[in-house]
Structure formats: C-alpha cells, structure tokens
Length: 376
Ligand code: PMP
Image 1 (cartoon, rainbow, N blue to C red):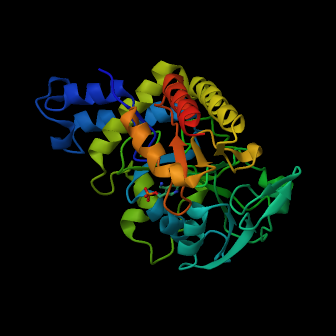
Image 2 (cartoon, rainbow, N blue to C red):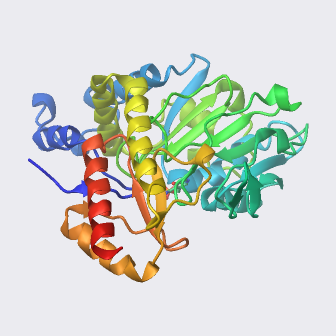
C-alpha cells in the first residue's frame, strides 16, 4: 500500500506497519475474541498491553528506576495545569519560573499563573542579534546562562520543541551549574519525544502528548522523578494527582486504553527500527537535507537560527507569499499533505516526525525545487 506523504504537525502520520497491525487486530486481539477497545482495563489482556508499553518505553529511553512512567489524559494542555498543581507545593514557596520561546511555552506560563507565583526566567520574545544574524522574536532560544531562576522556585519549565515556531532546545542545562541545584527542570517535550534520547540526569519531569511521535491523541506520557510526586495542592483533582496516578499504575480511573495500545505498538516499531538512537540518526539526516535545501534557495526562507532549528518541525516561508495558495494546492495534488503553517505565523511548515522517512522528505524537496523552477 502506498499513501501520500503527510507533514501534519499533529495528530500526525503514524508508521503504516502500526496502522496495519492495529487493523488486523481490530476485532479480535490475539485470539481473545475482543477488540482492545472492548476489554476491561483491569483484565489480564489489557494489563499485559499496558505493562509492555511501559517496559518498552522505559527501555527505549533508558528511564531510570527512580522515575515513574504515567499514562494520563488531557494532553499537554492539561499538564499545563497538572504540573503546577502537583509541583508548586514541593518547595513551600509556591513559585515557579518559566522560559518562554514560543506559543506553547507561553500557554504553559499563562495557565500556571492560576496556581501560584509564576515568573518569566527568560524569553526569546524580542528580536536579537546572534552570531551576526538578526533574529526575529521566537526564532531563537534563550541560553541557560541567561535564565533568572529563583533559588526557592519549585521548578523551572521549558518547552524543548516549539512545534509552531520550529525552535528546538536539546541542550538541557545542569541546574546546579546555573546556581539552582535545588530547582528541578520540567520539560514539555511533546513534539520531539522519542525523536532523540533524553538525559534524565537533567530533567526531573518530562511530559508529552502522544499525537506526534508516540501514538494517537488521547494519552499524555508523564515521566517524573519520584520526589516530584506527593506534593499536590489540595485543589488538585484526584484523577490528576500524580500520587494517585503513580500508585495505581495509571489506572486510578479508566485510562485511554486504545491510545495506550497504539502507543505500545509504536514503541515496538521504534525498537524494530533500532531504537531512539537509530531514529535520531535518521532525523538528523532528514532535517539536514531539508534545511540545506531551504538555505540554498532565495525563493524559500527559514527564519529560525540554525542552532535551534527543530529536527521535527520546519516552518518556512515563500519569499513571494502571493504564491502560498498555489504552493498548497500543488503540493497536495503531488501527494504532499498538510504543509500549511500554523495560522498564528502563516507560511508553511513541514513536520517530519519519526514516521516520515527520508524518502518523504526528498519528495518534498523535489516538489519545492520544481515549484521554484516553475514560479521563481
Ligand atoms: N505543547 C506542545 C509543544 C505542543 O506541540 C502541543 C500541541 N501541538 C501542546 C503542548 C498542546 O497539546 P494538546 O493539544 O494535546 O493539549
């Protein structure tokens, strides 16, 4: 079966093998006579699915034993509230500091303000001169040495891949080196989760909505060091209290069983590809070809500073924006789907997650070069 190349930012393309396996197992999972959607979450079949999903994810990311893996609901947006409700009680100060580098970190910051004394540690929300390049707001990432972290903050929050702006921050700091050894780093890794290894010695809590690299919408993965758990504010709904979620292996209430099952199939697919390290190598190659092609053209422009260009989400603009509608119509006709940029920034965006092979990226590059020849 061949399908068009799907560049959606999320929900986004899943590996075809995963979809075909799910289709084959849809009405009867492993001969038990039930669809995964129809089985009790407490029955032995689903318990096996859940346990394998957690074990495979732990193996793929090398999750340390003192970290809990939780499968939650509400997406990363709900975590914007769940994180402060669970963590602000930790330090006694009720304070947390946020690094702002795009739309998603701004949303996290805004939501957190409902729960405590929240400050901005750093922001890329203004133009800057970096390495001789004039960078627009939200096209670069504030270097950790510039963060102002309050020593009594309960945590500092970053979004490590701004899906809309295409800004990726992978060099997570050692908080001790920033003079804030007691302030844990909390990371929204939604849109590059499983595209590269995670250094858990740097982050105390990492969360990610599944619907990019990990599976379908409906499940949020939260990986939290155990000392982050057990500090929920009294207002925190019990279903969102990490203590309850962790103690009950994500079954405090009915979990999103089908989404966990599909995520589990994706984890097994990643293992078959050679793990996160192998996918990272592929992702580096894919992004390098795409950005080299953008940089080699006057017809297209990529605005993010090269140091922080996302391997997953590449926003770009046509120098002549009056061609946008033609570009979208022709790319769609050529079997290249969902290239329209987010409405807040305009232009185009190619999201090239794990499930997008180099072949799909090359198809896009060929189309773009052809479009330039015809319209340039
Ligand atoms: N954070 C990031 C980095 C995202 O990309 C998204 C969704 N695209 C969100 C948060 C919000 O996720 P959700 O819609 O699942 O709540």
